[in-house]
Image 1 (cartoon, helix red, strand yellow):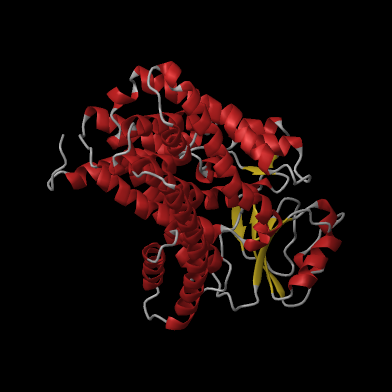
Image 2: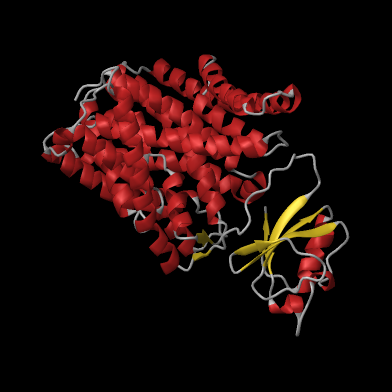
Length: 498
């Protein structure tokens, strides 16, 4: 079936519906949802829809990456990543370069034995397109299993995967320039300077536009609150486009802008987070569906693609990624061997490598079609092998733990308000022996228990309400330090901030 103006909307709606249902199945089986989205696109592309518009996929991928990187930055809390900024930053830069170098060298060495010699620069280009990782798949699996990570691994992986796409993108563009032009000594130095310029301008652009977005949203005072997400969306695309226009890395800029915005006081924060979370899922689904439609299954199953893709996938998972991680984290003694093993294994590939693999196609790079199909196959292998074993490996290494889920939803408050909501569970040390009423548990002044959840039932308490072990309390207070001290005196083991 060809795309026409009459049936494209129907096909798109059907694809989205099937993809969402497939995502539900992925959640149940503990597999990466994005793998199922990709499978739906491949199924429809093989049986029903003919779609070969590489330019459309690249454009949609650019939009999707802007949203994904911005939302990832916005969700990242500086208080959580400040202890892992250096190792996470090195994994996102040095780790990416080492992975690309190792995989590129491997491709260059084995390709002649497979009957098609690939030049070294093209081998490095192949490796650079798939040198970044995707944390969305990892944490969607862990969330489906209600599993947390010890040793501060979650912020480390979030920082690495959220910030390593720009590095892979810059490497890819640099290598495309080498492959498509004669690289003299002057050309090499020019390319290196352009690389440094992209990084520097990207950092400055992201920070400045992030600060400008915060100031504008807090000062504009829109009468219609629904327009705040639209305004912030405009800032995202402007940050990317303008930074790219002046020679910076737009993807790095949008990630840093999201990081700045997410860690400053912001009007309408809750509605903005909800909008961008839903929009991120939408663009991820659309991106994976289009990538699935784009791939030619017959070419993907050709012997040279299957052999090279399988060898590269195995080498990346079991050799290149672990070596790059261990070499990068060598100076950081605080990470245990188990933590290093886990970080090595969760280098999942996602949609980004496939999107990047369309750039050599558009640039007319030699072996570009082989490169695209190999990257596609490696991504599938990574999601199948690594994606389905992440949770089990965390448990096997003793790094995973059951993560308590919130009983009460997030409460939307203006950032200027000093009020803080917390959720705690009543234990035996809190109520002592015999009956204990709410008024006797010794909470500080300016503190109120707003709601109690008991056996799945919610009710508003009063001072004479008798508490029972296992009750969940929604507590609001202006006195944060005093409340923390009271929780400690009461023997409360876990406090969840809402």
